[in-house]
Picture: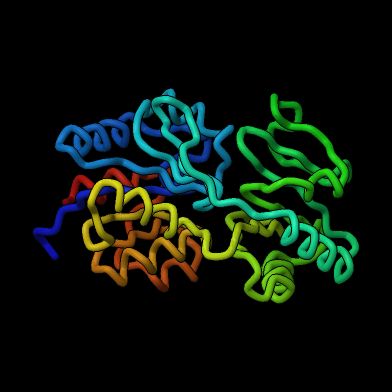
Length: 267
């Protein structure tokens, strides 16, 4: 594949495109601009909600963002959501009720639109007092469709908790994890970064064979498998989770070393 070149570039944000201080290097921005100038779309595929995309919009100013692990598609230039795949109240009530029964110290929050709601006991790690963030009861959280349900446990190990959530869901929804915490990110069944990327790629008339995707955490696995199975390039960062490296076609440098830009420049 020495002469292979992508027709679409997709990248995770945290731990991949972004450095630890939440910035993108000038060289990375320049490399993405170089590809964009040749007509190659740049797509961000992230677990982040739409409300966390304003800063990257200031940096890149263009493109499509696949947010909430595939549940929300957003036009960055217009800062508008144009497609959603939502979890519905019947699933939300079942999942929260069963998890609370199995692990009473499980706390919940939800993402929808540009809003975030969390139980009073849930401990948000970021933007606690930001616009659109508010406390709500569990009954209020599950009363309407949401893009993502977050289940957190403060005491259990991450992998043990995520496995418990997978067992409870039993195919009713999709679960993944993108942090070191015992935080399960739950989306509608079949919704992953792969499903969101496939929709965006199809809108450009592009298949997985012409996509390069970059990532570092388990929530990137579905996208890696989709691209790899189709003959594209699935590129793990040097510090990536071992489960992601196992399904990668390539490995590049770390986010601090500008691994995304280095790999693209080599093409």
